[in-house]
Amino acid sequence: MKERKRKGFAGRRIVAALIAALLIAAVMPVVVGVTTADAQPEGKKLIVYYSLSGNTKGLAELIQSLTGADIFELKLVDPYPEDFDAVVERANRERETGDLPALAANVDNLADYDVVFLGTPNWFGTLSVPVFAFIDSHDLSSKTVVPFVTHGRGGLQDQITDLKALVPNAAYLQEYAQYRDELVESDVSQWLGGIGMLR
Image (cartoon, rainbow, N blue to C red):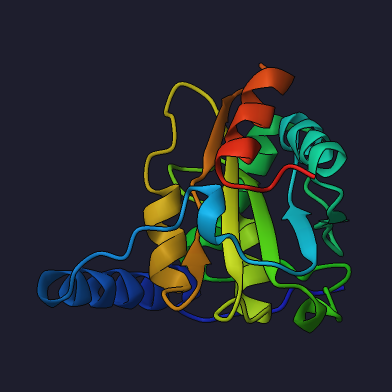
């Protein structure tokens, strides 16, 4: 099955969104996501994530066990190959051309959820391409978004900035970043407790 094409998504749309975000930031105070338990959103929680190596999957499943949230793994109609170099070549091409891969399934009942944990590995210093595809096909503007990221030596880089530029009308809570497969339950629990999300 051929992939869906989103012409200019990775180029014009992202650049335009980032420029718009910077212009807005220049004239308006920055709204910082609530990170204490005093004013947390109530309602159903959903974890949406993409994982290639399994690191993000492990973090997502731990978050589920600590929060009781529903969980949804992003999968592609045409999965990435097992060869790492081939993955890098294809993902970089998709990112640069805007040919976003088709998701195997969508979250059809997204309207039922108030809080969306959004998990991604760090790809090229930003969100993974499948997460871009999810954002392109799902409206998160009315949600409280809680990003979580797995990364290598590059750290977070532009992932949170790019996410907020693409979904500027969502509310955001403090993100969590994990280095590779170094999953530490006490650290994740402390983070979730700090943002009022432990069940």
